[in-house]
Amino acid sequence: MDSLALLFGRLTDGDDTAVKELLPQVYTELRQLAASKLAWERAAHTLVPTALVNEAYLRLFGNRRPTFENRQHFFAAASEAMRRVLIEHARRRQAAKRGGQGHRLELDPDEFSTSAPDDRLLAVDEAIEQLRSADPQAAELVMLRYFAGLSLPAAAEILQVSPRTADRLWAFAKSWLHAQIKES
Image (cartoon, rainbow, N blue to C red; front, side, top):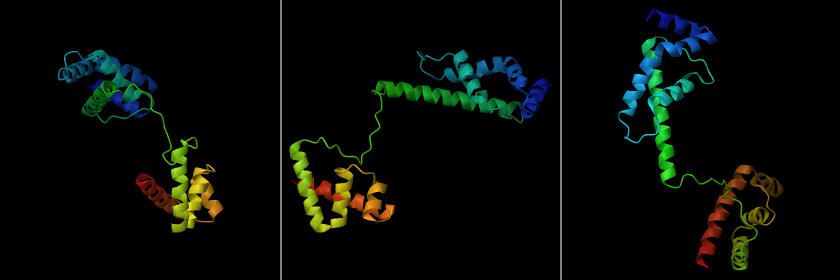
């Protein structure tokens, strides 16, 4: 008990050797804690107590030097680290069950494809013409974004409006155009 208190004090002082000395002294208890956490998991769980202890220890001491007030504080932090490892493991498993192995492709929903089919392009053009009669500035913003491929800040600068005004115009134009195209 006294040796752990000394190690925690050395950790607080930034002694890197204390991290290496701590694991052998607490390993048996950490392994028991991991085994008790895994006892509640399904029978075919792929994590074993040793792997859970190692993962939790890496989380505790991986890229920073935490300080612990006492033995209880250390084991509470270790228990929390183990809980998080188990939760992330379960989430990865759930994601894999539901097609999570696919690669995510980030797309900007505000960018339109200029290679739209002809009928879609004609519908957009007709809707823009209708928008031009309702709100010429919004129609001009759509033209700059859709056909010129400009970003919202660049289009705002060309239209000589604030970015916030351009953002509001863009939101209005998108919803207006969507409604018009959906009708046709």
